[in-house]
Amino acid sequence: MNNFQLPNLPLPSPLVGSEIGSFTEFTVTQRMPNIARRVIKENKFTTEINQNLEKLAAELPNGYLQPLKNDTGADFHDWEKYLEPYKNQRWVDVPWFFAETYFYRLILNITNYFQHGEWQGVDPFLLQKEQGLEAAIDAIISLCTQVQQWLNESKKAGKPSKSSLIALLYFALWGNRVDLSLWSAFEDNRSNFDIQTQLNNILVDDSFAVSKLLAKSENNRIDFVVDNAGFELICDLCLVDFLLGSGFANQVYLHLKPHPTFVSDAMIKDVYATKDFLAAGSHPDVKSFVQRLSKNLDSGKLILTEDYCWTSPLPFWQIPQSLKDELAKSNLIVVKGDANYRRLLGDVYWDYTTNFADIVAYLPAPMLALRTLKSEVAAGLKAEVLEELAILDPQWLTNGQWGVIQLVDLGI
Ligand SMILES: O=P(O)(O)OC[C@H]1O[C@](O)(CO)[C@@H](O)[C@@H]1O
Image (cartoon, rainbow, N blue to C red; front, side, top):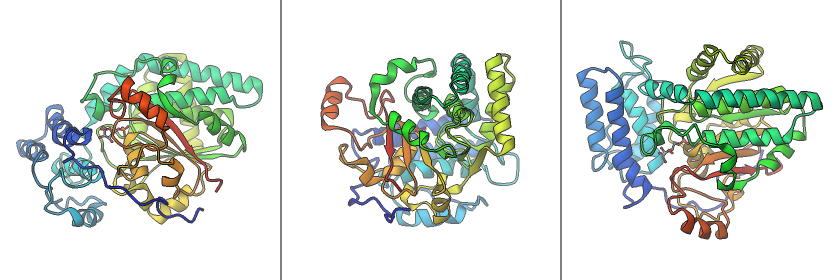
């Protein structure tokens, strides 16, 4: 395990909502209030709960963080510690990643998610997660058919196909465009896009290096720090299916969220709901995909695990030692999505050309980030690429049109 416990560079300042004109400001003062109001619209909570959700929405632009009442959640005392340095501060003045992560935890506090009673365990974002799946059915069928073909080819060739693996990395990357917290801000359906035409929108592409890393050994364990439910989760499950079926991996762990957050982030229950949704379909390639998924789950080749660390506001380098020790057993840690990418970098203003490996030098195993850019945090980009992007697409950092496939392999 490498001896760095932190990025080996001085930390820049964090993104905050008070940055006038920034996407962060837009998120804290407009998107997050809209997300809270959508929870009211999409559920049948009591008047009192809805009034408290509206109060939260109204206080975000200029108001102060409200305390967390003890809702018996397993992470309640941890949140008391996290909140200490930010008590009585305005939402726009605390670090954005803290504000956003706390915002989603507060929604569960207000809707009594953890407390015994009518609303215990009710996922306030369930409707959007279900709509996400229904909207993507055509893309799901074509992806399952493609995976079946790639598995057959690998079997016939007697070795796992690197090109098929790379193609599925692209699907897993672009599946990340389809995150519901962003949908509410931009478009209504992003799953019907053509992956191949997206290749030129990948700003860093280490996919070939990933295929070489995994081809080095047959008994790879691969850990996914998962992001969204819905179509993105299906892209991830198809990648997992191929990794296990082709021999690139003999065990895969999915690290999932212990409670609803960031609107569409996936929990263990969402994996089973996705499997059930697919099992209800009639397409033969989808049915055989579901059979393989069930077999991998039953045999322990695919492990679903959750940890409150993944819903904490902590940067990645502060994950508990026990989790670091667990991840140290992995041959490759795949980190999905924008919010997790922000955690990797600590959600601070790195110069976008900063060497990615100098920041993410603290992980106990090789790490692959698959992220579509939806926030003003980036690293590892070439100066000439930045110059081109500024002209080509001034919104490149936040519109979800651009992606990175960044591998850090410190030869640990
Ligand atoms: O699902 P993902 O890819 O983590 O995206 C969620 C991210 O997108 C946003 O909703 C928009 O930037 C952020 O607030 C959050 O970090």
